[in-house]
Image 1 (cartoon, rainbow, N blue to C red):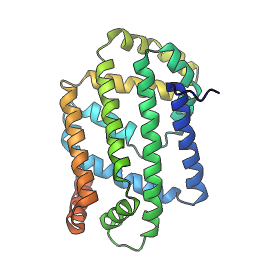
Image 2 (cartoon, rainbow, N blue to C red):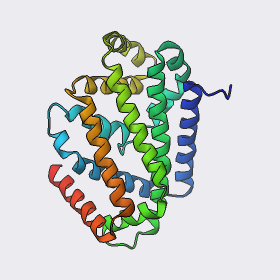
Image 3 (cartoon, rainbow, N blue to C red):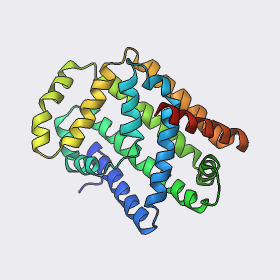
Image 4 (cartoon, rainbow, N blue to C red):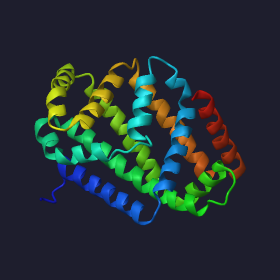
Length: 248
């Protein structure tokens, strides 16, 4: 296999990293801690975007972000499908679709790496009574603020690409025509991801405002978790957990 940087090779590289991280999680006995970290983060996201989730015009796009990009579920089947057709994505689709898949794979690898580091510290802080204090402690022990900000930049770029690509009616029509062949070829998880993202962004009245809002709110959270007084940051996290319980 060529080491020349291409979307296909980049996708395979990112997914190989995810596979290695999964194996490391099993070896270290951190599967339970990792699920707890992801569940905590999912509740924080739910609280942060309560207004979007309740807004018919933005709810589909908000759920796409929360469930497909930051979700706590198992993405291993989708990853396998991405890896299997990495070359096909590059050769059969416009360059922008290949870059979209590459962004997703990069985001996935970066998120799994940060979450695994969080899980290590989360497990080590098991004696802390409050979940918010435990999470904040794990966050600050993990550090890597530039990786966190790069993660947000990749999310923004992925959203910008989805916004641009949904304007191409011919591409959306071609994607719909691929539905049955994709299912027959065992690529249903990948197909559903692409369809869901395209459909969700097509329903947005103002995708740029939606993405600006996500970027601003997540930047505010990064600053809070990295720099704010511990008691203030814990209060905000605790409030978010209570809000997510109320919205559930």
